[in-house]
Length: 123
Figure 1 (tube, rainbow, N blue to C red):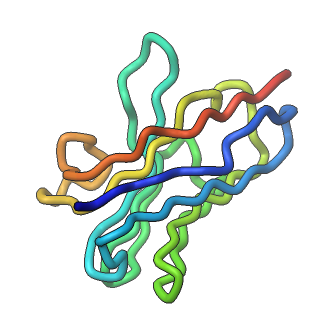
Figure 2: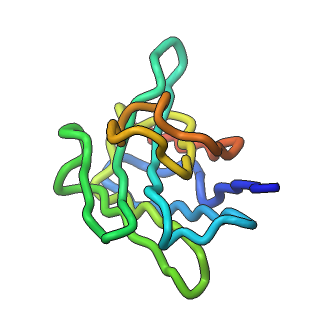
């Protein structure tokens, strides 16, 4: 049974940085596309970044140049480094694993999800 767990969310001031981590027991990251999503209150879940098995990356326009997705295959950990945070980045952040369709920033494409970690950016 696959279990996805995120960590690293916190309250941070605008302009600050955070690094989120995601582990998934029973699922070798290097074989699958992994992604980060976020959902703010009253809004749809949106794709933030993904990384596929070949190491190709893609980002939502709203985070390009500020966020970096990476993974440590030896430790089976997915990361999201977030810099220059602003209040619009406030959301619950989710890790998603095992894309079944090539729409990698679409939440409907993913099989496994974590419970989320809260990121709050104060102005």
